[in-house]
Length: 219
Image (tube, rainbow, N blue to C red; front, side):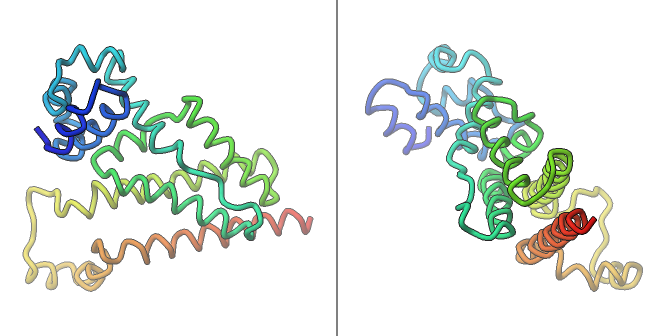
């Protein structure tokens, strides 16, 4: 049992917050595929039924974990330039995905329709409207940015960050000989380059959004 969880457990009765804290720890240690309510109960030093008293199912627990990540996110200061507000909102979402790499796979595929998530999405769509886009374009841009964010976080937490996934790999000598473009580009694919690459793509998205908005105003 994790000592930090044990200390919390001995202070009093089991709470939702304690269960959520432990769930994040177990998920990041075991991975989503290795997580179970039984393992969570073992980490907490309790019976599984004690957890079900707070969360009727694993789905209820996972929803609570998503809500816990989303709830603290605030819409950027409306006094900032719109482009900066959008950049901050995107980076905030990316940050919470990267802080929980094992849970990110679930987080990214969860259809965010709980009240907490809907309030957040409502604010983000409103942010696009604040930028001068009509309802249709705000909705489409929200989805487009979501595609970029989802793909980036998935790659950064479960893709290149995990190393090769192929069974048949090549050594450095073969890579340089047969795949020279990849050999040359490889230095920019590593985790140390994630931020610069993400920022490049984000700036391209912001440039295009402003081009679309300004073009619509000119008509």
